[in-house]
Image (tube, rainbow, N blue to C red; front, side):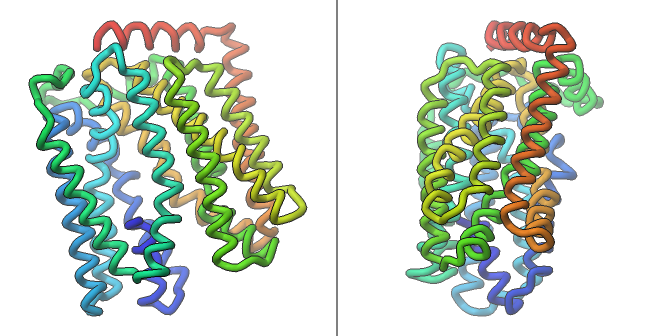
Length: 388
């Protein structure tokens, strides 16, 4: 909600300046590119519950400040830039901490299911949030979206406060010391079951998961519909994502083969969605595309955490979030440029083709290694579970 309201506010303040919108997005994601690994170090070094209380309060405060500025009409574009960058800085620490904290809440027995549910909610929110924000902005106004978002952090902070720390399954904290980033990179590099899925995730998320751009352009420039029809298309995609989230939450242990299969399925569905002849078939095609995308991303998140030792989980998830979200400043403008030059259909199809090629290449590497990646994946998962 915050991101959509922020983008809408930028367009209002700059009279629909695409450059200003690009600057805002770049400033918000720049900290992810620069400091994601450091955020993971912080997550491993201190109490995750304590970190989350600080980061969630800070994010709520930033939303409240921007909402009050927008409500009074005194907001300036440089203030939006500054607050977007500040939100990005907080997110750098919040993301890996929140991902790893799910495991501490349930322990080893419920770890796989908890990770799947957490990842499903995270990915579903990335799709449903913009739809909700659009409704709020349309009916109440842009400041209301910021203020509702700010109020929602109260529930998060109350939930964290009411937790009983002695019942958490806390991982051993990493001591202060030099070389912790190098240690995390060496840890991942030595485990094909970690770095191969991360490489695949980079290509799929950067080039294939630009639906906020491609769905809007398909609705407007290909099928010539209005804002309401675009909202309905987003809702259909969210419906598929919800189905994928529920399916993922029922699965106890993702495998490397599942990752490859769901990534390939997502690629095919995205290509088909870009080829459909009518708006009605476009809506229907978005549902299985959403199912496949959320199933893949949830399995990717779960497998990364399940294959990581508890004391390394924060740093590895910092790398994961860098790979998952760090390519957004590259992928979204590229998808928009391709759509402008060659059409929205080709932009969506190209995303699916790149994702499919990446899946095929990773699969070929696994076959060439004679299944070594799959065996490494299984050994890493077993070791991580035994240490939790």
